[in-house]
Image (cartoon, rainbow, N blue to C red; front, side):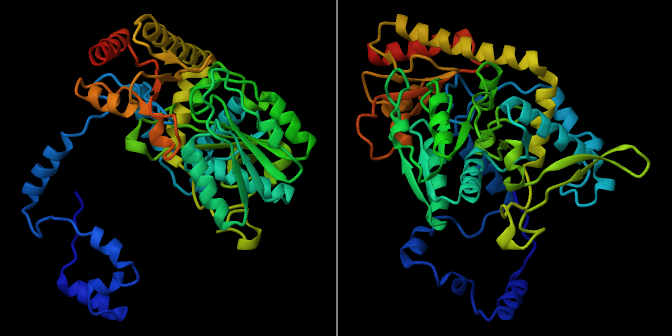
Length: 451
């Protein structure tokens, strides 16, 4: 709970300094309708202990992913985080300045960021990576804006496989930048195929694809990249489940131009939706157009290895018109946790973790098919997440299974409001934490509701 030390006299002095007579005047510019909706039926004063007790009881109404079997995914995944990660991120070597303007006193921070960049570049199959962005969605936007700077074009083509939240964020930014966004509908078919190649022409700055797709599809997007390059457009590859790169070929393997991803799955818990970790990597050809922070390796006056910030073209270091972005920081603690977790796993450990995730998903799919409940598995190929077609409303089923303390997944219609024929689709995710008992409880609960 926050402690607010200000009293009425302090508030009166601050209002006088800005030419206001009451706090109400601070909100005069807001529509009356919005102000009316912001009025809550709360008592004006309560003792602190009563407020704490009330909030504690209120929180017990929540059901988290730790309170029972959880099959939630859709861009945020529940993975095991080794206890050693928490220990490592608190060591003094890495608790140097968060914003390392003075490299001589920030070597711990700079070194792990350099290692982080190396990990991301290796994972994605790209030449160079930055020191992280805020999350996968904003990293996607920065990639789109970077493509605009490089190509001089203002049209963007978004695949129907792209996470709908990412689509919304791109559309919001693009509307302020004079850009045109063309978005294909979500891919529901079993093969994961879409006719995106037909929409690629010489007017687009970039084509954005995601694999595994939002609805779970794993598909071949190499022809998309080839067509984009033929027409001098860039390809941006998006990944929302970074663990998948332990099993699937990275976008760099297919000659992607920019790769962005959400790195939450490694080292970072669900955290009620944030803070998360945006990964950003590109080809060496485009490194000077890359947004955010970049750490490089150098040699000091004594010939010792050292680390420094380099290619700094952010708004706070350069005139705004020439800046590659207005990003002022990076997801420092989240990137440190990512680096520690991935270092502990190593290449073979990540591969084994990815295989385990994949096997768990196929085990659950097999149990669902064998249950004879009339539930259809839609994607033909998937990693650790897939869509099922229920014989009833997915949203209603999710609410009913909460009564059994089971978080069954994410109703697809919730992410695509207004689209038809999605009401019965449910997005289900499995990770290494999904045990056989969880799967059996889900199947039993579905039988109890459907039969």
